[in-house]
Image 1 (cartoon, rainbow, N blue to C red):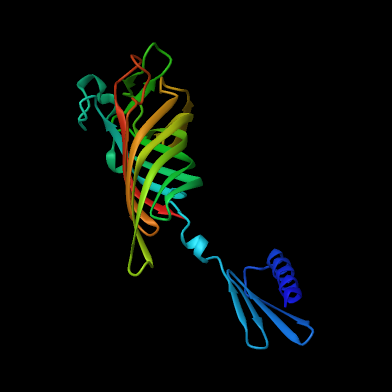
Image 2 (cartoon, one colour):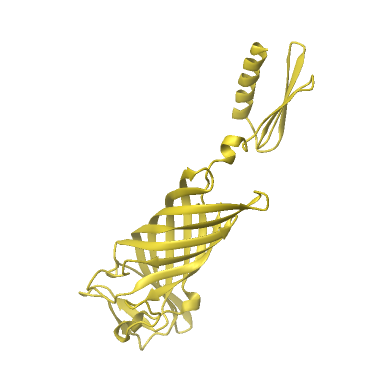
Length: 273
């Protein structure tokens, strides 16, 4: 019996290495026993004399493993608050007024790491992602980024069909997540909160306009006095793989004394892989 167990373990390990996504069946004959291995996501070992051994990914160890909800993607609206946490920008800063319905944020959270605190119910979540903030300007302005501070001028010659600034960040979160099983542990309600740090890795403006009936596009890459580092509070509430999120930046969009004091926010839906 010990010999059979050892052989069975070796066979199972070897078959796992060569497993395909589709269901595979492999048959081995050892002495008077016939061993059938059926593998897809789970490993099913059947011995012809009637014994069946299941080895799957949902064993008791993995059932208790904490799995957070960062990896995936976020999509939603983004905008600015002034230094009094109002959506109405100060008069001198209103050249940054946005077309809110067309100002979108998108994040691709490509890496996730989890540390369980209480089995699969409470844990810490971190990882990495890329965040793309699209700020669609409401006014027919062009930004001036090569002066002592960020300013703008109103273009009286060109009429912009599209006028936006795109800011790209590499993000790293630190979240505390709580999970509550529902429907007989088949589904999960989860709540998380924490902070997301960001390193700005790209900034450009894009303007689309017509000249004599021909569409023209102009891009300008510069830092526009934007802060290189950002950190934002985040709150997320979800059911299984879908969540709603709200982010509020604790750091101003621009460097101190180099332009309007505005604080980015975003809100939308998050879809976990």
